[in-house]
Image 1 (cartoon, rainbow, N blue to C red):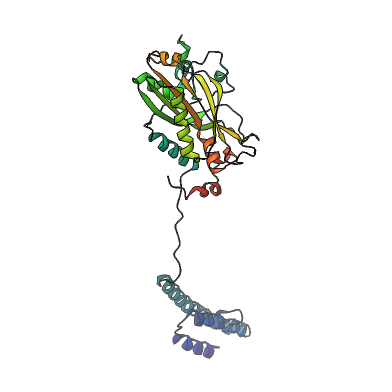
Image 2 (image 1 turned 120 degrees about the vertical axis):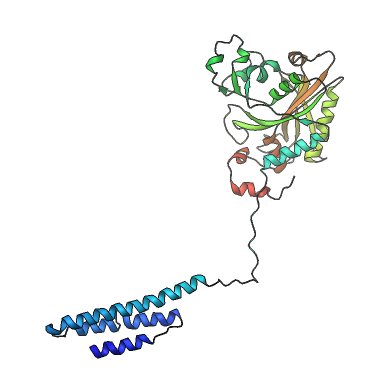
Length: 352
């Protein structure tokens, strides 16, 4: 046994593997389950009891020596592989970077603003939490108007310091139900003429469906000057529709009622989804309402300190979700707030 071990040691001493394959062959030959060390330990069983102590030590030293040589070469190969530069095939096409895009509501909002800017409208903004005066009273809403009820409005808890105030219009707060409150603030803070656009988010306590949501986005417009007429309003909105939907879009006005305008109207356009044949969006009528409008009620002008005998004006308001539905033929406005990447990726190519 001693002569065998010496012979194997001499063989290992000159062993210089040039690849991991040669090293693996070495491991199998010496350290494998059917390798040389296994055979030596089997032979060790037949050694006499007196010699086992001597040969046992020699055999264990040889095992440690063989394992050490193997581990040394193994570490060297692994170190060389980690420092070696990976192979790069420069003929392969590059990996493209995925680009983002604007949300469809932002695309339409920017387009609406751009159209009215060409008509001289500026932008105005206001707070989303409003008091009763700016959200209702100044706009000619009676105290018993249903829009003030909890069914339509999200009211905000009144601060303790204001609860004893006798003026209810100053201690009742709510999430604004329309951006008309911005019109009130604009007219209070300045003098006519006004020609402004008010985009923003509004809130109403409504059931969520394909056609309605508890929050949505509005764009409202205001024009106040001397001798402003309903004809000015109609021509402004005709221009807007033709620019946004195309020259072939049909328009109709229907008499309506709003507390802050008189006379009032709702404007419909021919349905862009079914082309007038009838669908869920237009309720099988072929027409879709896109905005409400009218001449500003003289009471509203007087409430904000504007002489209604000298000045007149018009106002209009539209929901951006409805406009976007028609422009891109989207049948469910809930898609706008669900953050579905598959839906949003469809608008990456849109550049406004």
